Length: 173
Image (tube, rainbow, N blue to C red):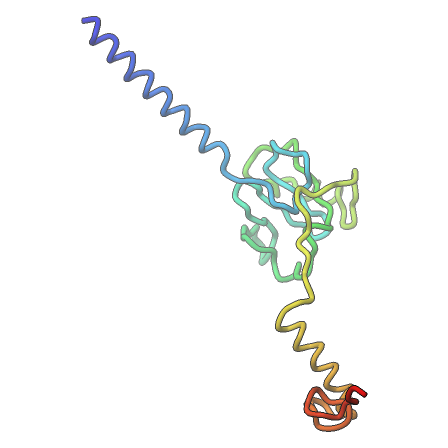
């Protein structure tokens, strides 16, 4: 009888520990993007006033109005092409805990008009640096140099004075 009680207590303990571990895993679904403002760990939404778009941290989705409905996508709409997420201001929606932040859009649009800047923000991560190194960069600089060095005719490669390779340059004395 004593062994049976010990086994039952062990099984209950195992079930309790397993259930608790599963809850912890499910709570941490989404993480803030590198362009998000630092210091806010318990929020779900940002509002980007310059482009009138929400960002859902939990689902990693942008929420914006288009074609008469609110749309959720993992990317910004084409009207926002070129928008700098690192440089743009993010309003942290600390007091909203529902699933539809846009229900208060008219209030947000008035309170945080385009160009709104509140307290200074620091991003969670660094903005990626685009390097000028690569096939496109080399190709573009090459075309510029070719144009200059070939006597004004586009694309000449060593076809005259000052060309690339194939003579035309001064040798060592």
